Length: 182
Image (tube, rainbow, N blue to C red; front, top):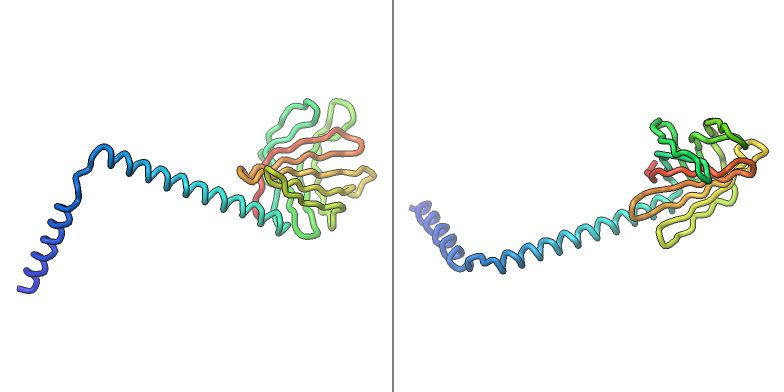
């Protein structure tokens, strides 16, 4: 008897709430879609802001990596894709581990070689916040008589990272890739 009374009560509540709900009109459906779209937009903005904070925290921690996907020699060299996953630059506090392809030579034909060095305490390391993200620079001689300047640009909104590798005697080589956590 109690179960029958409980079922009847639940059915009555459902009937009453269904009767009180006004029928959907095209205007109300349009308003619901508008609200859902606004909520989705707000959610995307929050995710974008969280990603930008993540990029900032990586740069400030000095514990990140640059993974290049293409490179070319300036001023108008052919762009080459980088498929090999071993090429990257790992940056940590007081240490930079470099393993990237590089165009070497003063006149054509330029040779592609690999820069594969671990540099403790690179000189003039700076990380400056910009309108688009970060500009990071440091210098090293890579154990040679040539001085190299690494100039990174990090774009917070996309996670893209570019590198201009400048040399005292060779042309600048530009890399495009992404910033990743180590």
